[in-house]
Length: 79
Image (tube, rainbow, N blue to C red; front, side, top):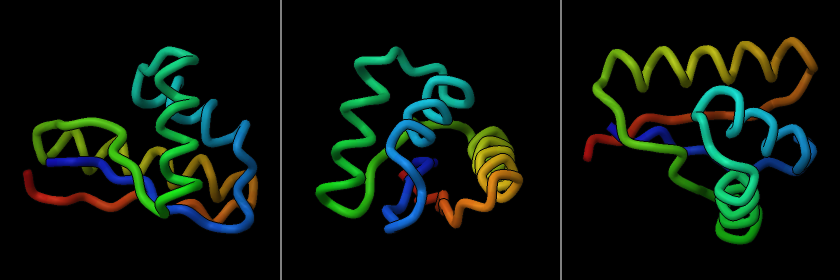
C-alpha cells in the first residue's frame, strides 16, 4: 500500500519534513522533495508498505500532527 500525504493550507512545511524524516525514514533531501511535491501537486507518496505497516504509520503521523493542532492527512492507496 502507498502511504499518501495530502496537502493542506495549515501544516508548516518544516513540520512535514520532520514527519517524513521521523516516521518514514527519509533523508532531508528526500523529505524536502516529497514535501514540495505535496505542496505543489496536492498529494505525495511517502512510501510503499504492507497494509498493517502503512496503516500504523498513517495513524502515528496523524496523531502526532493532531498533538500540534495540524490537520495533516495521510491516506492509504492500494498499489
